[in-house]
Image 1 (cartoon, one colour):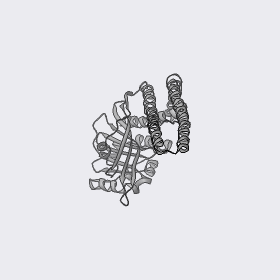
Image 2 (spheres, helix red, strand yellow):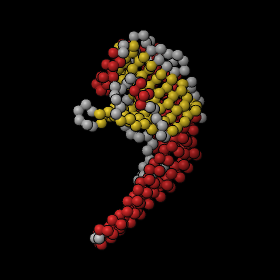
Image 3 (tube, one colour):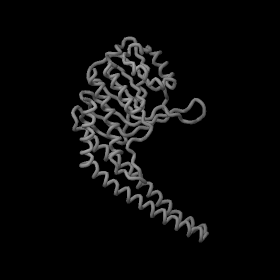
Length: 314
């Protein structure tokens, strides 16, 4: 039933893409081609100017000709940045308009320059880090069924213990949702194969009264994929129910992504790894591709389905 619904939604999205998103992509494609032609023409002119400078060999004239060259390169960079910055918001808003027409999805809003805050990220307790470098963008908020949520792309890095380099702590989509009803208890869920990298976070949670509760997880596949800790007063299965375990496991299998989850009374935190920027347009290749838009739609749809699972399995 779930699989049939997903296929039906994708068919509906294909029709919506043809009638609504494709015309916007055509407009964006024209802008991309104009920029590409401008870059090609500019490269030719710059080569000519460089040849003239080398032929003349007079320093004052060379410096004089360099001024407009530098200014023009700056202009090209601005044009490229404007294209990249306008492409994603226009397409994402159209995708969210489509999703807003689905049952249980409402008030979906997109803010390209807003993000989950550093304080919210650290409050999850999933990552023991000072987050020396914290960058967020592409904030989406709204409501799934009765559950309010917000999420954004994050890149979090910290200074390595040895050397002066920055190690990546988390890169992907981070989500914060709120249960519609009162819930008591604290749970932390880490991918089992990543456990060695989160020893400090696990120790900090045990100091706060957390303990390993893998024996309370009845789904064998979930136990293999995740390590689960909770405080002693937490009814684990009451919060992390068996249908929820199955849904989360299914998501990780379908996407191949790591997912980190924390329950803090009514709050739900989820970090989903994504080692690339979602829906970032190309300047040198066409963006007029359904598969590019479908991939982003499916990413958002699957993430919001996880939010719905949290609500439905309560």
